[in-house]
Length: 130
Image (cartoon, rainbow, N blue to C red; front, side):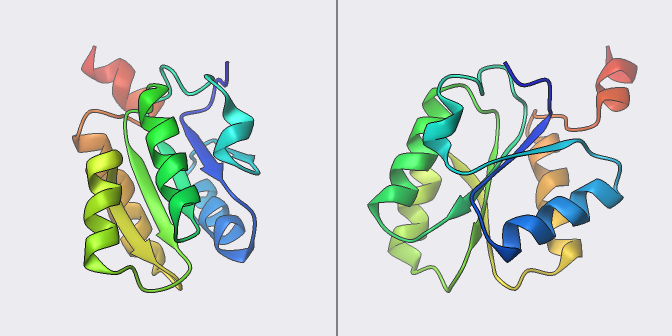
């Protein structure tokens, strides 16, 4: 099982950029190529950052991560997300969708919202709350 609080799923510049933004905040980020590479290892992982490719594969990835126990899923989308598809992603388990190019502040805000929803990405905050 991963000992990380954040897992970035996908390849490409936006994934790398997201990892750098989160690392500057002192967060431990693990990268994997696809949600299928995770298997069941997200059980107990508090936050998963899923990288979206529009279509059924994105929906399958979100559903797979949610059913495997991911506490919160933030999606980075390579292009504008139509409202109907966005609603489907939210129903599958996503808590936020950011479109590329995303502003670093928006990513950090989405992670903070995920934390507020119960998925702490800050180990020291989790321990302090205990």
